[in-house]
Amino acid sequence: MKAIVCVKQVPDTSGKVAVNPDGTLNRASMPTISNPDDMNALEAALALKDATGCKVVVVSMGPPPAEGMLHEMLAMGADEAFLISGREFGGSDTFATSQIIAAGIQAIGLDDDDVVFCGRQAIDGDTAQVGPQIAEKLGLPQVSYVAEIKKDGKDIVVKRMLEDGYMTIKVQTPCLLTCIKELNQPRYMNIRGIMESYSMPYTVLDYEALKDSPLIEADTIGLKGSPTNILTSFTPPQKGKGKMLEGADQEACHALVSELAEKHII
Image (cartoon, rainbow, N blue to C red; front, side):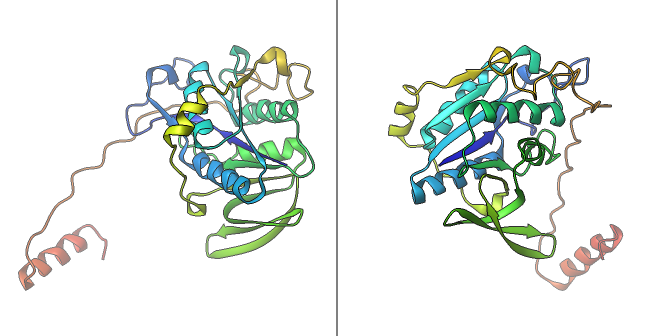
């Protein structure tokens, strides 16, 4: 049994967003972090490993600098890592990205008892599309917005978050689950894991390694295979400084009510 985790290195969107002339993000000019929801997906896979002894395999699509992120995942407890990287894949939108990652998972091998974990969404796009699209292209049953996971024999029982509650679903493997932050608290790396991770090689899957997949064609990957066009990208405006009202007397209460009423909050 394998737990395959799809992770992404994303720009730190708390700073300034740099954009290339073609509308794509200039990732090389921005600091990067591991996508937060993907860390919850990794923790879910590591918890499954703790419970069943399965192998945890991490898969990421991105440029060579993503190597550092993969070493962090190995230091946390992942057993194997794959980096899908090639110039032919550059500029891919969610459709093309899911094509490429699905082909990568096929190359790694998907067994009958495997589970694919993804984060709910990436903070650089917030589309929540790649995980479900991967499942569709691999022909896997999927459950999104997973807030709890239990292994039940050959099946997986999950609690899925809804707008007004939860629903419990039993899903057969192989399957794909997208994880939310309420699912768990990602563990920290330890010194031993960090030291061992740099002796664990990762495998690069480039265009040559994946080109024979029926999912990889010139019109389904990269900018040419991306039906989504970005109109504009920009840095969100900074929030203004809050106003502090001091005091605990009746006058302070009246001032607070007046401020709230003026802003139509009450």
